[in-house]
Length: 357
Image (cartoon, rainbow, N blue to C red; front, top):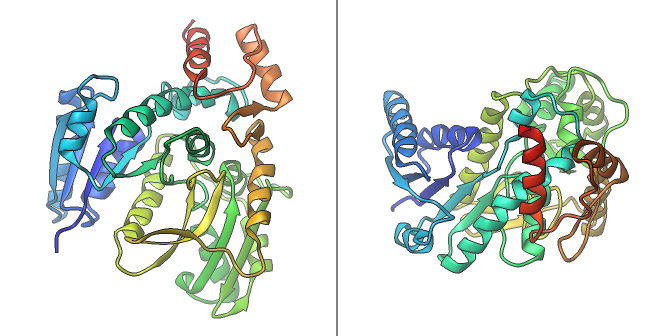
């Protein structure tokens, strides 16, 4: 039986890490590496071909020129007909902003991601090719905004999944079991990760729901304690490799004939991240019996403030917190107001003009 195909569109650091991981995963027969620059796509594809081949993995990796701002995008995409599309476009990624030492709330840069994701959304909707879209640009918020205003990603990857390994490892060490025996359910939004994968111990964490069990025994109290243990972590380019690992875990589940328990952020119109059951049949949010969906939604909504967002309305409008508005006013010299897909490019351009001088 043939395996599905994967299209990786826009070759930033995260997408490149996803390519290298996917090339070694044996999940796909064909991986299409696409960029506005054919040369860049060829070089990244070549690196993956040699690296994966050296390790004994030989998927068909193809390089293509594909620009979602070009008139021929929809036709080219339909001809490629990928089963999965992975994208993480941004006008300026978070790690580059960190390198510049710009001190603003995380939400202040949302327009840099939303502008391109909106443009891509519109072209994908027009193409109507039925691919499963994994949107990885700040998916906890961006995916919900796009889905609340029309077509949007099926889900994202990243932050909610990444602390799970820490929980399993530390709980296993504490109670004397194997990490794979620790079953974890976590509801958490983007900001949560930075407080639990950190060299500093934080007694107060962003709102979340956590349950951990070992062979039916509830060890949530142990999990809650070890979650706060200091954990030095490199929030630099190396971080993209961890996110790619979360992506491969998700793709492994989504290409599986049997259901797999994982965690995903940015599921349709829902903010934040959730425990899910995933397989080739689709994704279902899977909460423990004692949690309601209303509780989980409220937790992720409350956590937005830790990123600098007051609210994301039902019509997909991002309402910045007062802290973010004040910081943007000081940085830009004017207050941008609320953020929507329609004005994202305008806000992003104002940010870029100030950042680049």
